[in-house]
Image (cartoon, rainbow, N blue to C red; front, top):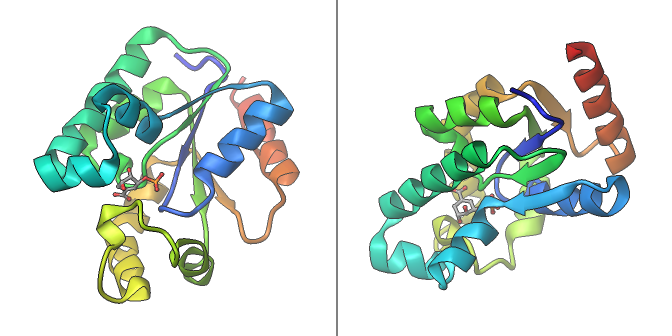
Length: 174
Ligand code: S3P
């Protein structure tokens, strides 16, 4: 059942955390972030989790966290999902259960600019950043689109405009 929750999905650097923070501050939404939640629960960084336990372990944690959020019965909350979270089929089902799924789309150039100094994301370490982004995007873009109730072009919209579109979408569902 949908209870005014907004789930932000999209590639690393697409603005899920920043826009989520804006929604919290400006629209009085509660906010949770799957990455932050995992880091707090595990007491170690995402780099650390990937290095010591591997990616598959992290993906299991993401599903656990999502299930926990779905069971908790959240309300009026913006949930920022880690960039790879929508890929798993079972996560897709949980996302829909949680609320309106919004895909924040960003141009590759924008992503490169935002991610070039980042050292916190294990999947982007080493090699050519643009190529890594393009390869992952190729694998994920269709999935993001499939999971989304709404797609927002973040390169062309302000946060205010993005929120207006979300409200319009939510109203159209009622
Ligand atoms: C990942 C994205 C990251 C984080 C982890 C893996 C991915 O989250 O969950 O580094 O697979 O795209 P952000 O999208 O918040 O950066």
